[in-house]
Length: 282
Image (cartoon, rainbow, N blue to C red; front, top):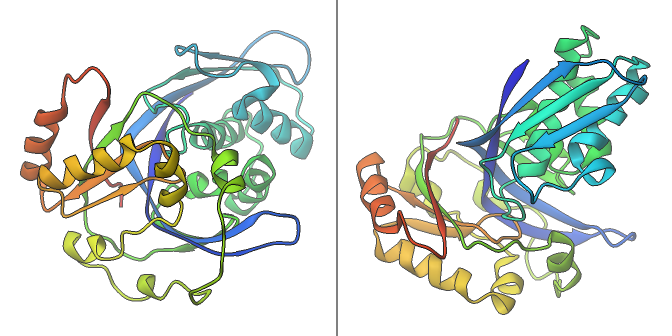
């Protein structure tokens, strides 16, 4: 069974508080995009509840460190099923890029095992499992534009959004999400509700008006190249540019497909970055 596992970008990310256990609370507008991995799941011979994960990228962590492995074990724990599976991943989403590459593969694994083994878990069941695997995994279970709150697990539909054409730039180095949050100097100076996201966003220009990321200051402080890539996207005609998640990827939203294609041509083939032409799946 083969599934498409889309990446995501955060069109808006505000930090709204911090829990007693140290986890930060957020309010974010997330959309899946056309850049994604292929995840293939098959039944194999082997010990009960064993999981074999293979990826075509050496950067994918092996064994239990992999979110796909954790997702499969969570699935076995919830369902009691024992059939061993093999998961093969064709990676297109850069790792450590703020694009949700590990989380989307984990969500695809949960959905795929449910279908492959015929366990009949509901979407609600899968969402509950996804929370136990990682904060971004529930978003990819539904795979639609959503407003994420709490630590990312509280999802509500974002409503209709326009098709967004974008250029995504990965600067060939990962950023640790844990490091970014550890170094975030949070001070509550704004309302806990993200009022910019309340209301309709009908055009790319209206979306561009809400593009802000509270984590940029931390990541750019250590990696100033991210700020330079944002400026380059603006110079190429982006109507809005932003770092996705905790980085290191940045993306520019363009008024239309033609503008995005022209900008992409200006980045394609550069040695120090990977450029992707993508559109939102909304």
